[in-house]
Image (tube, rainbow over the protein chains, first blue to last red):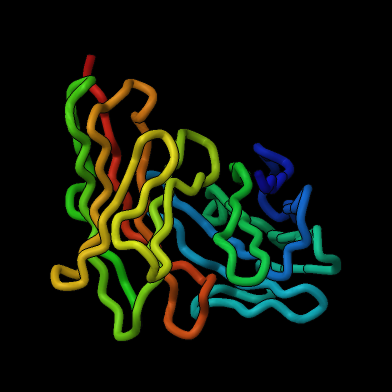
Amino acid sequence: GAVVSQHPSWVICKSGTSVKIECRSLDFQATTMFWYRQFPKQSLMLMATSNEGSKATYEQGVEKDKFLINHASLTLSTLTVTSAHPEDSSFYICSAGQGDQPQHFGDGTRLSIL
Amino acid sequence: AQSVTQLGSHVSVSEGALVLLRCNYSSSVPPYLFWYVQYPNQGLQLLLKYTSAATLVKGINGFEAEFKKSETSFHLTKPSAHMSDAAEYFCAVTRSGSARQLTFGSGTQLTVLP
């Protein structure tokens, strides 16, 4: 089946640093990738939708300058959390889709900002 | 706007007992509905999907769900629970205007008792 690889799976960094998370579709070309944020014991909240070669569409309330999304190829999207602060600590999950097929999810990245 | 409501944030069943996880949807257009499972510190795995074909949908791991338009429901069932079924389950619906942007329910934590 389709595989989406997300890296790193866990990252701890100091407040003020920037962190990049990669999302790769390993065996299919993902025309669209999605980035979600999940707080403990809560559901997934869509942050942004990313189409290859175009600017990401951010959900209301998500800071574009804080969460930079790049989707430069059909197999790779990156989320960069800039100048991260403790309140940015969360579980970030990407998913990739092709046409109208169901999304395939990565295993998530647990981000801890000290 | 589309939404899903999952009744019961926690469900406990004995091993071998029936599993019933409830999901009701709200949609002004025919919805696409999904059930996903999430194990700790992992992404989401698709269990099954409804896309306006058969109303009874069979998924992986012995799960199935029935789309009932009159009740606006898409409940997930499994005849006999296994210890490995313990996880978080999310119902999701496509957002109006897009076949792939998902809106998730709040999730149901399933505990299987020995």
